[in-house]
Structure formats: structure tokens, C-alpha cells
Image (cartoon, rainbow, N blue to C red; front, side):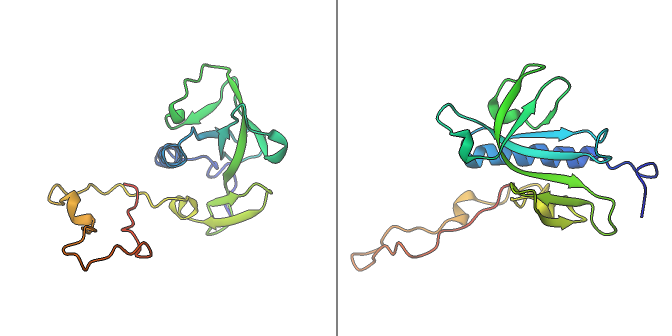
Length: 172
């Protein structure tokens, strides 16, 4: 098993990029800012990333797991969900989950839920994230209209069935 001196438990540039893009995708999906802060390894011996949503005025903090994101020297990745964050700003946030690095054999990433339980682990960061995100370029030959079926009735006998499933698309 490697020690922290042999291979420091820090996120690579590609991993940090993926964490930031995940926070951005969650912001778009949820319609509110999702912040991802990377906590350095000084105290724990490993880096970890925390995902959280800044509390709104109407939110009741006693119903939520609340954490603070930001502060002096904070390393927030992604586009901050559209928030402008000045150096030293601190936000009370609803904790969504965290991903910590591990030196266990075959496990580099551990996902931790709101109760502090380890709920997923993998050697691949993508396996513990909520979205399938690829770096593959979308072909220019693809016609966006090909992804969707025409639900309009062709004649008077066609009936719209609300129980038919819609076409599912993944984030790219």
C-alpha cells in the first residue's frame, strides 16, 4: 500500500476539471448554484472534495446538513454556479456529498453521503459521480432532430400516450 510520501493523495488536474464540470452540471440540473470545494490534505493526509448548495433565505438549516464553503485560501472548482465569490467569502450550504481520496488497494475515490457513510468507492472518479460525462466530441453529422420521435398524430386515429417513455439523453 503506498504511503502519502510515495504518492500524495491529491487530485490530478484532470480529476479537478471533472469535479468542477460535475458541479457545473449539477448547477444546471438543479437550477441553483452547486459549489465544489477541494479541501487540502494538510490535516487528513488526503484531499477531498465537498459538493454543497448555498442556503437560500427560505431554507431552514435545522432540516439540513449544513457546512461552510469558502473562506481564506478556499479552492473552489468549476464556475461556482454563477456566483461571484470574493476571496474570503464564506457560505453556509446544504451538504450534498463528498469524495475523498484513498490509498486502499483498488480504491482511489470514496463517496461519502450526508450521514458520513461511505456509499460508493472506485478506482475511477466517473464511477462515483451522478452524471455520465464524456470528453468525446459530438459528430457534426448528427442531426439533433434524429434524437426525438415525432409525437404529433399522423391521422385522427393516433392518440398521445403519456405513459410512453421519453427519449433519454446524457450530458456531454
